[in-house]
Length: 297
Image (cartoon, rainbow, N blue to C red; front, side, top):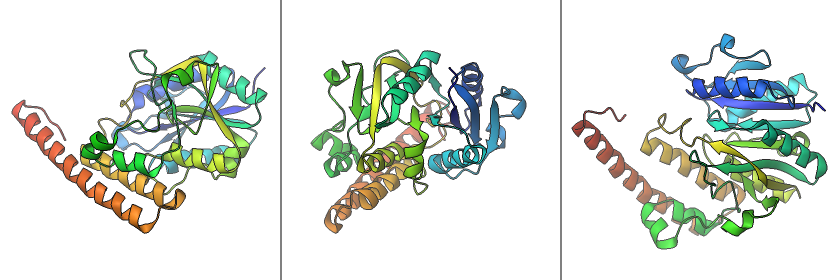
C-alpha cells in the first residue's frame, strides 16, 4: 500500500549527501514527494538536474533550520494530500524498512504524533541521544559551560541504556536528524518555531506536543545511521555555533519553561563563562592550525 507521505530535506552546503539521500528515498514507495529546502550559498547549492523526478528543489534564504524546514512544509501544504511528513538531515543513511516501520507504527498508534528509528553513530553503535527527556533548568545550566558540565554532570536528559530494550520507547523529544510526523498534530503546534536559528528545535516540538497530549516514540526494532557533523560540523566556527546554541537555549528556558528572572540571569552568567571558554578554544585552534599549516577558519 502506498501511503501519502512527503519528505523534507534541508541542505546547507552538503549537496553530496542531499543528492544521495534523495535518490535513495525516491525509490521508496512510501514517499510520494521530496522537497529539498536549500539554504546553501551559490557554491554549495543543489542543481535541479541532480535530483530525481520525485524530488523538488526549493531555494530558501539562510534563516536557519526551523524556517528552512517551515518554508518547505508550507510548500507541501499548498500541494496538499499528505498525511505524514518525514523531516531529515542530508547526512543520514535510512533503510527503506525504517521508513515503512515509522508509518506502520503511526498508523497503528493514533495517540503518537512522532516516530523515529533508533539512531546509530557512523560506526554502528547506538546513539544515547536518539531520544531524550525534556530538559530542565539544571540540565541546561550544565550545558552552558565546560566547567559547569564537569561540576553538575552532562547527559542528565538521557534515558538509561536499558530503556531501549523494548520494541519501542516513549520519549519526550526525538532527534531532528530523521523522524516521521503525523501531519495533523504537527500542524496543530505550528510546525517548527522560527525564532530559533539552530538547535533546540526538537525540544520545542516535544514540549508543545506533550502539552497537547500527544506522544513520541523511538522504534528500537529499526535503525538509521547519522553521519554526525557532516552537515554543519565544518560550516560553523566554534564560537558561532556556541552563540546559536545559547540563543536557542535561553529562548527555550524563557519562552517555554518560563524560568524566573533569577534563574534566567544565572543562565546568562553561565553563558558569559561558556563564551569565554569557546573564545579560548577558537584561539587555540587557530594557533594550532597555523603551526601545522592548516586553514582552520
